[in-house]
Image (cartoon, rainbow, N blue to C red; front, side, top):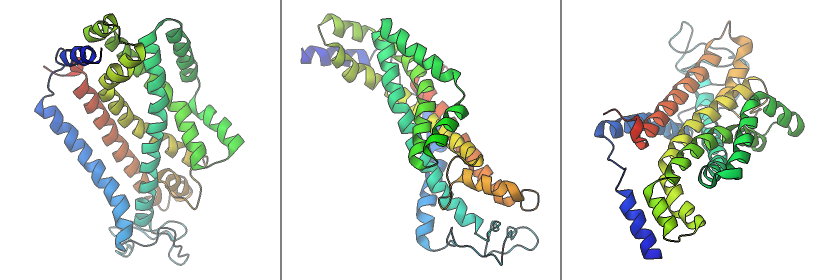
Amino acid sequence: MSQLDDKVATSAATIPVTGAPRKRRTSVFWLALPLVVIAVACVVLPMTGLLHDAGKQNLGNTLAPPAFLSGGSWTHPLGTDKLGQDVLAQLVAGGRLTLFIGFVGALVSIGPGTLMGVLAGYYRGWVDVLISRIIDAQLALPFILIALAIIANQGSSLTVLFIVLGLTGWAPCARVTRSVAMSVRERQFVLGLRAAGASEARIVLRHVVPNLAGTIVALGTLQVGTAILVESALSFLGLGIVPPDISWGAMLSAGQDVLSKAWWVAAFPGVAITIVVLLVNLLGDALLTHHDPRKRRR
């Protein structure tokens, strides 16, 4: 059975799969490269000693403008906030936590989402109906209401934030995974394995899930951007990251009170969020196109 199983799967792997165009692989590389550079910079720069302490306050030098504005100094290249903290140092420290939240938030969403989607798409019947109704019910609830209910009861912390990201992010992942799993279920190699007597669990774990790997990676990438936006929105409302922790969303929240006279306090983290989320979403779209032959340009 094992030899027949592997032989059918091997022959099937050569049927619908075509090599991705070199241009598509190149676009994925050039979209991933700046994200890797940003992540490495957020981790490495604080270790070099070139930046100020992100939490060090200087009440005698509050709201100092960036170096490129009149009155600015290269001692604080991006200026200081209302507590005299260096904006550049906070931007780097906040980026480290923000990217961590995005990565872990994607994992806690894609994990249960993939599981539910595979179960619904492969087994169909009452399993599909039940899971689909749960997905519809979850998508009908605004995420902010779920977040408010959980945070009001449990308080603000990283653990609570990840629970919110998991509860609000799994349903979109499950819906996409379900659709792809339904397609894989009807492929010839799955029908051949089933006819050969392979167990359902073996087919799902050894053949269906590996064929979903590309879609799962692409969905996870897109979910990173979603998690960053959710965290930023919650922190802006005072429901996310709280001091002494620093994130880009928390920096936005801290800068809204002084936006009219010190725009840089909120502008730089806002630009950072926009750039990272844009790059992540473009990368996710490129990966989805890379792994879905129907979306490739011919």
